[in-house]
Length: 257
Ligand code: SAM
Image (cartoon, rainbow, N blue to C red; front, side):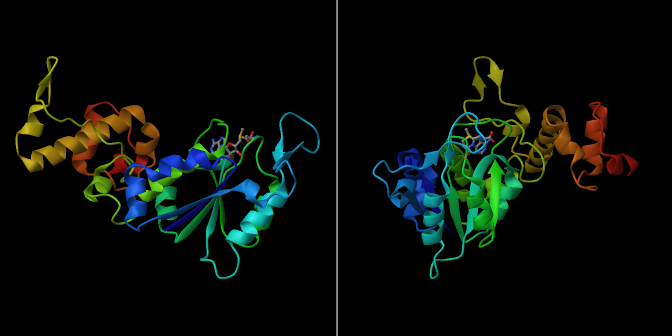
């Protein structure tokens, strides 16, 4: 996958050289180019913002540098791309979106700052290429750079070959609509707290059932919305019996079974 990030703070993206993303880059599974938006400014102050039409607090990112940057990055001969614009007014980011983005050959990220990017930049881009406006959640941060880092962490680990053990992707939270249950490592006793006996039993069938039960109970107590959103038939008879015995409400389709 090829990734271009346009930002006024290229240094913010330095962590993309580290850890598993850095390793994926070195292995040729991911190519990342970070571009300074000010490269596409032409005045002495390299201005990227101006006051908002209609008045109000803060500044808005001017369309000209963004237009020139996107024209260059999407010019004929360049691989086709999807533009991803982090913004609190975007579609909420989740694992399903990470999976969709991981299937794209090329992503261009536009990092907003101040009060955001002039809307005409997004409208103009949407006429030429697919655009996803994406929100990390219902809160506001200073700029798009941290959002890009979070999105790229989620997306990169889904690219085949990036994770040493692809099994991690199958068993983890949000891969099948549930949260993962608790995990433990050595030592077996720590400050008087024991690792559950079953995990040390070597009985893989019982361990798998225990993990499923823990995932169901944790999801039902912390995120009942996820249980309610499971497709009908996703819960088997043992799942249903467990949740009913624990006093949780089930999706209508599953109760009827
Ligand atoms: N005025 C904007 C609003 O009220 O919707 C907020 C702008 S915010 C201060 C500046 C930039 O931070 C945004 O353009 C976006 O790039 C980024 N940002 C802020 N909150 C975000 C969120 N929840 N998800 C993704 N990006 C966010």
